[in-house]
Length: 96
Image (cartoon, rainbow, N blue to C red; front, side, top):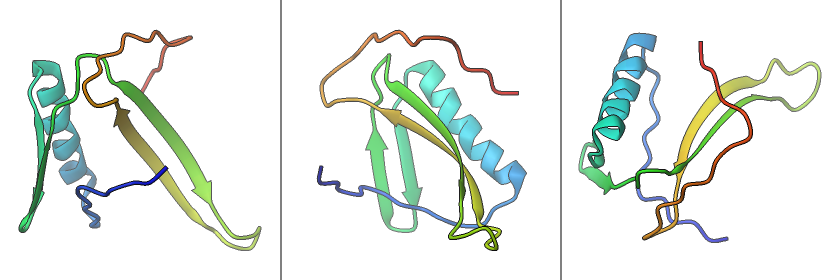
């Protein structure tokens, strides 16, 4: 499926700075507000519906056993244009 990247930002930040960005996005989600991402001259505003699909993934990528690799945690919200789904998941997520 083709993909258009509307916004991309990648920078090494402190854990506190990352938490502040995630908290701002969480606050907007909780209040039902749009989320605007901006860096330099790039900007995009997204309007997640009331019930988007939430995906969280923890990965360890490496080329072989001698490669220490790279760890990542990815948070993703997905929804179809104009749709507001109410899909129920099997089980519940906990983040501690």
